[in-house]
Each structure stands twice: as C-alpha cells, then as structure tokens.
Image (tube, rainbow over all chains, first blue to last red; front, side, top):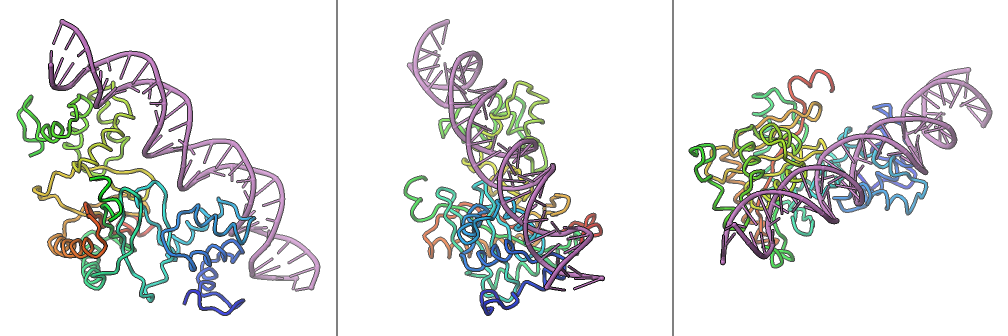
Length: 159
Length: 159
DNA sequence: TATGTTAATGGTAATCATTATCAATAAGAA
DNA sequence: TTCTTATTGATAATGATTACCATTAACATA
C-alpha cells in the first residue's frame, strides 16, 4: 500500500526489486516516493526536478533509466499525450481504486483523469483482451484509452 | 470514396481543401495517394520514402507539414505506438468499415489491427464521450484504444 | 564489520524525430 | 499572362531520450 509505510520500514516494492535482482538505491527510492506523492502525468523532467529538490546529486540519465526499469517491471505506466514528452504514473497494481483514463486537451495539453464508466470499460476490456489474446496469440499486458479534444478553457479560442 | 476516382478526375478531398482555402499541390496529392494505397501505421519517413519514389523532389519537411495539416483537418489520424516516431493513417470519415484499434507488440513493434467488439466499443465510447463532454465541458474530437503486449513471435523470447 | 564484485550512477556527448527558418517556386485569382 | 502569396525544399535548430564511461556504492561473502 503506497505511502503507508512507517518511516524507515521496508517499502512495499522492495521485494519486487529483490526478486528481479535489482539493487535498492537512494535515487530509486526517491523517484518512487516522488511518483507516489505526486498526482500522475509527470514528465521525466518533472520527476527530475522534484527529486533534485531533496537529492540534488540526481542525474537526469538516472531518472530516465529508473523509469524505464519501473515501466518494464510494470510498477509504472508510461503514456504519450502527443506533446512530445512521455508521462509517467504509478500503476499501484490492480488493488488501488485509481484505475482511470485520460481526457487530453489538444490545445493547451491539460489532462483530466476520469473514472466514469470504468466498470463497463473494464468489462469490455477484459472481454476484448481475452478474445484478442486467443485470436492473435498475443500476450496482452496493458491498454490505454484516451480521448482528445478541447477543454472548456480552450474551446472558445480555437475551433 | 478513396481510390475509386477516374484518373485525372477531381479527388474526393479537393473540396475539403478548397473549403479551407488550402491549395492543391503535387506533394499534397501524392502524399494523400500514398496514404490511400498503403496499409496504415506509416511513419513520416515511410511516407517520405514512398512519395520520393514517384516524386523525388519531395522534401521531408513538406511531408511533416502536410501530415500536420491533414491531422488538423481530420483527414488523417496520428498515433503513437511507443517507439519514438509518430504513425499516420487515413481517417476516411466514418463511412468506411475500417474503424479499428491496435494491438502493439512492445518487443518487436509489430502492429495488428483488430475490429473485434468494435460495435460494443463504439457504443461505450459514444456513451462515455457524451457523459464526459457534459461533465467536464470538453469538446471531444477523437479517441484511441490500444493494447500492449507480446505478439506470438515474441512471447517466447522475452517473458 | 571489512572487502570485493559489479550494478548503478552522474555528467556529458550523441542520436534521432520533429520544427523553424528562409529564399525560391508555383497555385490560383484576376 | 500577371500578380499575390501560400507552399516548398534544403538545412539549421530544437528538444527529448539514449549511449558512453569513469566513478561510486549495494550488498553478498568472508
């Protein structure tokens, strides 16, 4: 359960790292803390800056490397919202009630999380996943659903 | 109806251009022809190379500019499959029976189009769009649904 | 607890897709 | 045919991400 550990206690993700043979380092711990404490949709640079405040020795390359690792481990999701930089957010497994999708403003880049119809979506997604896995012999790990359009602030400006 | 015009006849998209005040140029015509004749998921470079075969004077910048124009006009969809380059495919309005989504192999980059459950998806999407438009006052133009995983060829290699 | 192996790091250069710039060209209206 | 100006092609610039490499620090072992 992210963010609920006693200070100094073993973090929830320590076993995941150990199991893969990965070392638990200061940069990795802080990057995960930052991801846990922040609202989603952070770019690599956002994360770098936040980590830098508490750990100024951090290097940008380490942020990218760690994020790639976390994405491969399935602990973090990587998104592309069309503005040329990737965004990252904690996956938090399936247990958290935070499963959501995104509404992206193509004018200002604002991102709105929504959870409406999530249950129906999940049902359809499950069904589709099952069918597609069989039909195409594809091992599905993940999915994205995104809506693009203009947010309330922008729909006046540009039509 | 794309690809069904007599040689030399006015193309289906001429009016769309005229209506917007855009000029009908050789590069634009060829780019649209290439998009029409090819299977989807072409990168800008793919398109550049295909156009270059029939029109060697084409410049890469023109390809990018034209694609951006077509995307803004809604004639072309732009996708990101996570490999660092954008992919483009003709939208063909809503009339064509080609509405599909993508299955993306995160190992080899292979892309499979699928149309399974499209009707159910469309229904859910419509419902969601309507709800979200109202709730967030968001003018939705577009959506993407993508599944990520390992294709049959890759699921052995990497687990 | 001290030590040795080697994964991980930080700084920086390199890469690569996409954009911006600008003089030359060609659509299309008159 | 002429004129206006959108469009083009070549190339430089940008910006995110990755590669490289010498140094550092996890952590298994003694």
